[in-house]
Image (cartoon, rainbow, N blue to C red; front, top):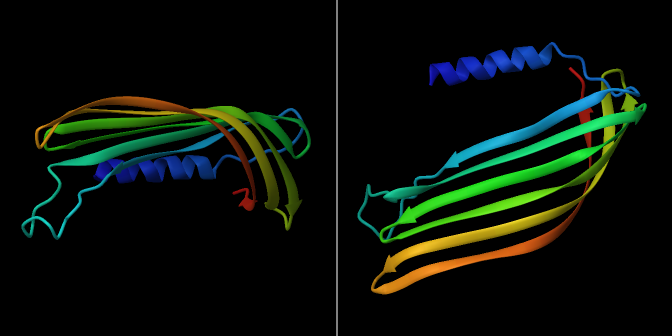
Length: 160
């Protein structure tokens, strides 16, 4: 645990020393990542009991862009997530993938701050599968869907 905290602090200090650039000819690399594991306690089972195989999920969402002119970024964004869980007699997993173009415009104000507006259009695919035997019922299922995702957003950023 101490190693994880030290790594997070180190990365934070390194990122804090990098100047954000939105000038013409600049590149931007960004994104986020998440790992999640949940232990569920339930009123329907004896006190102190937990889910035998808690669900585990992770998500990564990278963005890469280029500034052809000052304060205007064009690029590619995407996301991938995966969830795996097991219950007595049943194992299941699901995934989500989406990728597509993104545009973002920054309006600088008050020195190191900027308002931004963003739009993206992504193609996505979702799927899941489950296999097992629950109370005598055999389960063996798979499915997937195709999504077209349109996203817009606005916010404020601080260039450290």
